[in-house]
Amino acid sequence: MKTSIIVNNIRLPITAPMEESFGAAKKKLGLSGSESLSASLHKRSIDARRRKGGAPDFVYSVTVECEISDKKRARIASLADAQIVERPPLALERGSEPMDGRPLVVGFGPCGMFAALLLAEQGYAPIVIERGGDIPTRQAAVDEFIRTGRLDLNTNIQFGAGGAGTFSDGKLVTRISDPCCSYVLERMRDFGAPEEIVWLAKPHVGTDRLLGVVENIRRRIEALGGEIHFHTKLTDYVTSKGKITAAVVEQNGARWEMKCGCVILAVGHSARDTYDMLDARGVTILPKPFSVGVRAEHLQSDIDAALYGKYADLTDSSGRRILPPGEYALSMREKQSGLVSDSARGVYTFCMCPGGEVMAAASEEGGVVTNGMSRYARDGRNANAAVAVSVFPEDVGGGWRDGVAFQRKLERAAFAAADTGAHDYRAPVEALGDFLDGKTSHFTEPGRVQPTYRNGVYTLCDLSSVLPGFVGDMLKKGFRSFGGKLRGYDARDTILTGVETRTSAPVRIVRGEDGTAGAVDNLYPCGEGAGYAGGITSAAVDGIHTAQRVMARYKS
Image 1 (tube, rainbow, N blue to C red):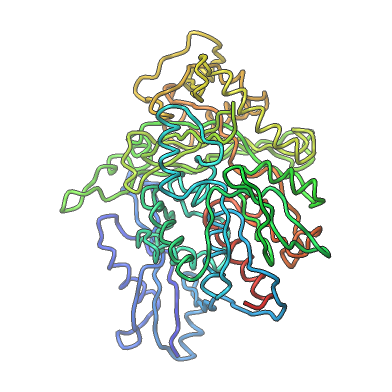
Image 2: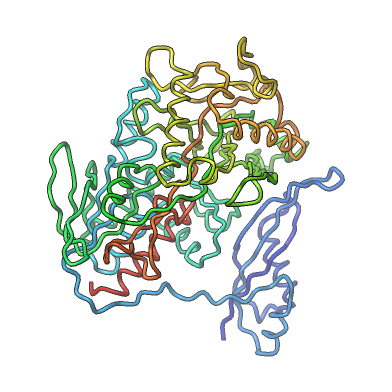
């Protein structure tokens, strides 16, 4: 019988050909040439710890497909670095309940996109509505905002085809271990993402490549009978006997009812008006922890040197750099009294973008929001990441609306602090040295590290006057701690840009074991906006599972 085995912890020099990992895997398993059918790369990561000043290593996991005896199978199962895997096919159970209309998917971010894709491929012909524009329209709106500061409230970094993740490097790293994660990576590769996303330990697509992936998925859904309506916003819904029978939608100022059989609600973490509508309709929404902070920019060359030392610019025989642009993930926690939700508050880096830029990510009038983005090549001068502090419900009042109000207050404070009268959404910027010193005037001008937000449209400000005291204090502790973990991270010329408030939704829309909201029998809240995901991959996985629940209940 053919057996799939993942062999882990194969450590090789960075100069060794990748194919050497295949032979090393077979050797670990004790397989002869006649037993091994094939070997392929499963994952590759970098160990940059450089013991005693040595070079970093590549650490491989290899999938070996082979036919072995039961005796050898039992021996391999006992090995510490080997894992026999049996990946079940995607569950496609079909229900018998008639659906009184087509399924409606609200939102075309990762969650809604993958839910609609699976439904379309299984014959359910979904209708998708998205308040923002399609990819070409959205790209034009984002470019216009960066160039002029004129904000489109419905098509921007947060809203439009592909969701907020489209303009954030397309990072596919996730902490969840769901088997569907591999399915998501493989489907994205099928629709044009780089091949290596299926085996890189920290896969990314790059915004420039992700735009095409989203377009290809859109075409696939439409080719299978699905419909996608852009610039179309959910404003309400009509119910009968506890079920939604139609969605009330708005497009270009016109409003009408769109008949549907069920609603998959995948609106994303910035659809604050949708939360208000759901609350008014009796859907239970609870507060949950979230985080806020700033974007930190360093020179990418400094990050590479801190991680890789003298090996940062090592090249192969063709002159290409062997090691990719350096990435980091840093965190610390501190016990604090008075917290009900947790005994410790955290500060951590989030959405790290090598060779990227800080993006203007506002979606409401009079509020500045930052995000980070990289293109596939990750060849920009700066590295950036959110440095965020955990915020608990009791910090902000305890209700779900209080979390949203807290985010909005910070965004408006950032706008006001940086505004020079043009109302052009320039961002408040401060050198880390000034921030740590508590400077309130005569700020240090950027030098080696130049801010990338809106190509340098910013105002030097006292960020401590924008951020709540507990957030500012934790950020200062975090930077000092991170400087001890990654050399130069606390360099005084590090650039801070405020504010980062949309790391996750501050709410959770309660759903039952069947995936539906308690107040409505056929409303399926899911993804980041519902509080059940945190990133492209986990949101896509939640969308897939939601589509599976719909299929398991309804006939196509």
